[in-house]
Length: 166
Image: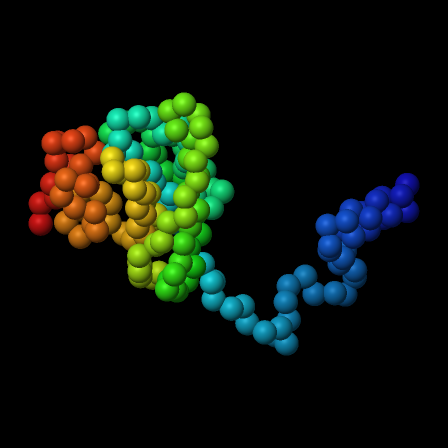
């Protein structure tokens, strides 16, 4: 029976690209192993804002689901969306969404510069103009330092967002 278990274990390890540890082998990397490289990505919460009067049935950024968004509101967050560290010129994401009629649409969005050492969320805005804008950072819609401002930032036309007190 023990022989059968050993054969099954070896087969399972081989199938997933691992080799089983044998007696005397270290279970962790030795000092001769090169130190790990710093992460090439930074994780952020994925948030969506719907500035339109139609429901966004579902949205995705590079395949990561962000949920649905009612008209004039923001979505809950989805964890976690990875961004390149550091930001680089020409960085784009693909935003795919299902509109209120469940028709799938897709658009490539250019992402403005962000500080990869100071990110909490990746915010996607579906604007009334039909444009989609996205920003990465530590602030959210309505904060004085948030890049989307004025009428464009209003979730409901004519109703300003919460104003932060400094």
